[in-house]
Image (cartoon, rainbow, N blue to C red; front, side, top):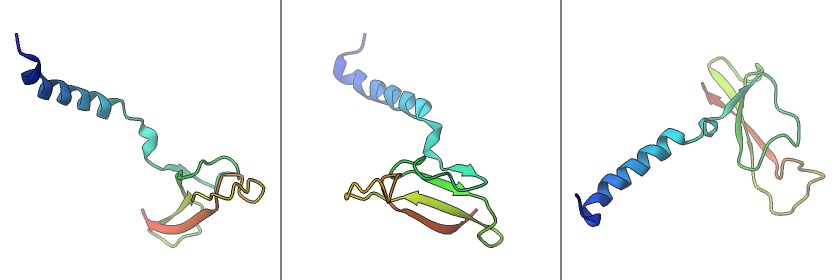
Length: 88
């Protein structure tokens, strides 16, 4: 039987493997054909929109930036959306 200090590296490796296996797949940006409606995204959320706005080989990335003003009327997602074209 192993002593507790010598078993810690194996325990840590096992826990790391479990965390990696069970990590949500939602960490990758979701792909949409049109930009999602206002109020449907969360602050920090990143989505890809393939609506033909960007030139060939690029896709539009939409990110909701944080805003501390709490202006939910102007920013129902919690902050302004930032849009840019990125390589596929």
